[in-house]
Length: 204
Image (tube, rainbow, N blue to C red; front, side, top):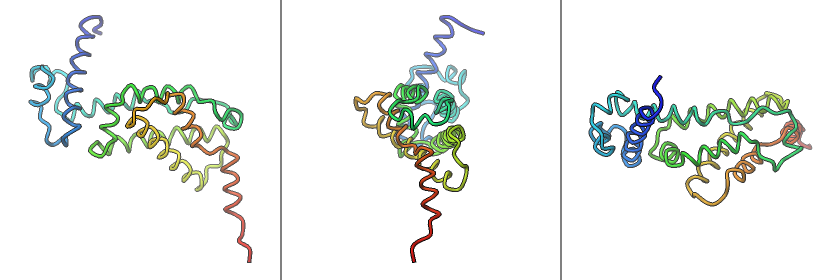
């Protein structure tokens, strides 16, 4: 395995290629982006490009895979009932998740934006839903049809919150946004109340 200066040089070269690709992808559909455009913008040769990627589609795939892996699990393991005990205390893993999003702000805004890759957003939603469902399992929430709707809402609201935060680039910290994300999620008590209300018969 390569290490040291040589590995660092390779990482810098890959980053230059990916930055060049994303600069083009921000303004053009991928069908209009060529390897020639990428290497000219990155200041490298075509042979250097093909040492890392087989096509511009390969660059996009590598970027998305790295981001998905870096985003990792959304919620950490915890014992049930934490929402009621510490509503305004964010999960450490939430804070790290939002920190990672901010560190990769430019890429995420492009990929999740109106001209981005819909499949990336779909995969991210799918991953979040798995983690949110696991979190609800730990909280002892009944896995019924109502929960499916709650999970869909929490997932969409969390992604919308993240995107709005990145798009506006305001001064709110990752910790503050993580609190907001936590408050989006209804507690077991709230969901149980919704379930009971839905079963009540209307007065005649």
